[in-house]
Amino acid sequence: MAACVLEHIKNRNLALKEMKRVLERDGVLSCALPTFTWKILQLLLHYPSMIYHFMIGKIRDNIESERKQKIRRNCLKYLVPNIDGEFDGNTEEARAYMTANWTSLLENNGFVVFKVKKLLPYAPLGKMREKRITIVPPALRIRKVTGLSSSIALFARPRRI
Image (cartoon, rainbow, N blue to C red; front, side, top):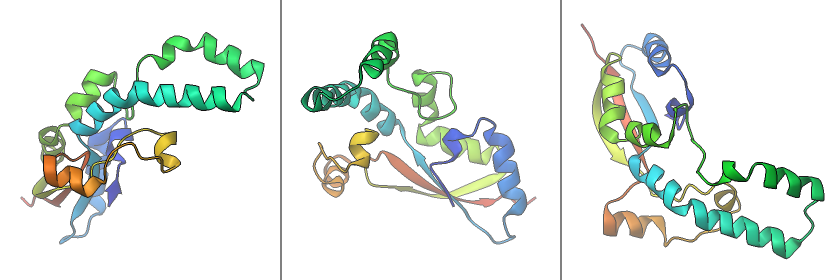
């Protein structure tokens, strides 16, 4: 099981080759991976997240002056959401997170994908998510109504020659 790991590996082909090598003969590789929807949510919710963190900082008003100066110096860094994985930019990451691209990556590395399962949608908001602050309705209802999923599980077997 590789849970949200592949997108953080620079050389995914080498990693998949090693996974295939160590997988038992009848073994199944299962990977939980972010989707295009996850990236879109990250891009759309970036600014509300920034506003939230700004307001919390103002309410607490106990940020040290050194930290304030560091934030001012790095202001441009906060205008664009961070790249989550090992990609050159948000556009490349969004393209790579498409289900078809994840499937192709596994198949090009000697696996046969036999099942794709949509997982629950969630908002990629970093610290807001860690603190269990929710700004979206329950995930089950979102998936049921919209069919959207921010992550998928791919199940694959090694291709036998």
